[in-house]
Image (cartoon, rainbow, N blue to C red):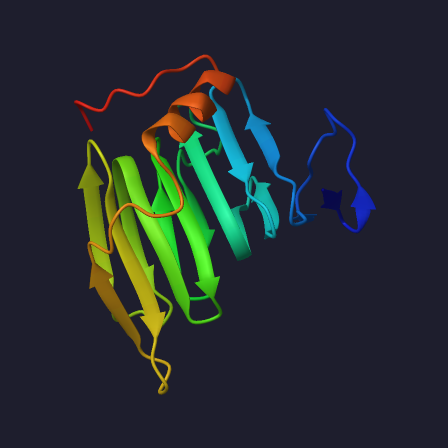
Length: 176
């Protein structure tokens, strides 16, 4: 795991604009406050841009899972930007996989997330107590096409429950 090109130290603080990159056999967990955790999966490139004026997480490639239970931005929400979709997040659990430069898998694992294709034309609000996935793809003209229900890919309940345990939380698969 590297932050801004340098090997990361366990417990290292992440700052605005930091670029986190993981290799083929590595991952990184980022704890924000006491009740929020992000997991950057293997072969990923992720930029942390949270400050009083900007609430953005950028997943350029790879995999990101998150569980947010506590407000950590002034506005109470944040955006996740990928090459094909932007998500508006507020207290929820999710899994994202940038499959390629023109395809992103996004699962609202537990909660509600507003999704918008990079073309600004495709919008979707997804609410789920137990996984609802979408795939956003750009076509040859730069438009975005959404695929409903591509299935449960790249993650499972056990992985999310383990991630929730990092912050002393449990998953309630019965309620949004």
